[in-house]
Image 1: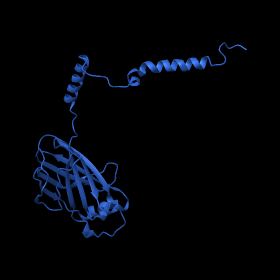
Image 2: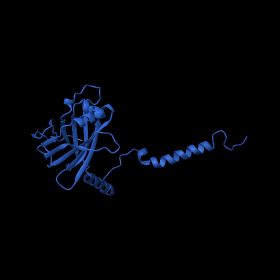
Image 3: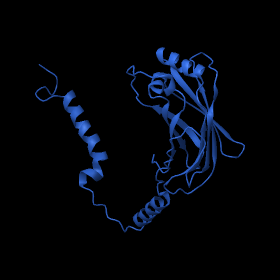
Image 4: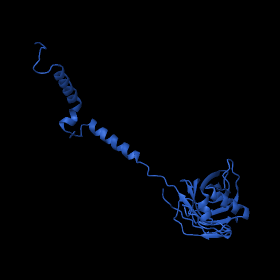
Length: 229
């Protein structure tokens, strides 16, 4: 997998940002609706976190808008962190047609809490530009109990990466088949010489003979030809 697009955003308010990216063979738009869950219930309730509008994958034109955490949500995140729970994130991605991708990811709640809402999101696209995965990181990855004030839990500070998953090399089967056909025709015309050694050419005949001789010697060992006294 090779990173062919890097969209880096550090924002909590709506804005448009144009950043250099490696040229790709396709272009398109995506709307990413983010929802998060601040509890580890069996059936957690997700609430709106914000949206990311990718206006152009090729030109890296992005509009990001994320909601601020309420006092209640900040307290829920703190409680979830103290309980060593998981922060759950859902991404509902639409690229303008009727298809929609529903992706999920998670991170340690204490990591997001101690990072003061600084996280990194990575959306992975397949070779057609369709989103197939999302991942999330928050630093520090190992929680050490650092002090976080309520004023630190207001705005998300998000970095976004978009990665394109490139297809591997395709074997040239046509050339290989042509080579096999040429070799076959040359053998039929007698144009090719067998340069293998004697053993390499006739091992299938030699091995049975050797096995037969060994078995015969084991049945009739020397010094007792007739089995008599």
